[in-house]
Image (cartoon, rainbow, N blue to C red; front, side, top):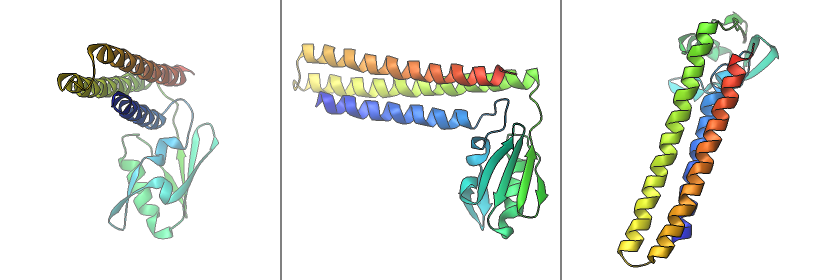
Length: 185
């Protein structure tokens, strides 16, 4: 029972870290990366569709993204989605290809992005702590119903805290790595 609770908590913590990785990939660092656009939703025939399902995204140069749209009818929808995103990008259309020049980041914009990274990391840490809280409640419930002993409870709490510390440390490491990428000129 305890192992099942801890396994469930660890799976949920892993998902939180994976979500953080995806969120951080969408935050622009100094160079162009296809992951910057992959999460964008395009209104494709009335259905919100991820951009990476409608086009090929590549970064042939450090400050250039090229989006090759597969369906000619979707080009304007893709362009609109990119323009309306919070990324502040302005694509130029050339047939079924969109070219997006990424301007160099200003110091002020870098600071804003670092702040955004810190917010994402903090949200993940809160999520991991909430998972810990839920698992602790389940363990206390087992103790209350006398299915486990107090010693088992203490050992389970200790193992749960070790898990929590490991995943919070991983979130902080990912955040520091992204912060370094953003501040690197």
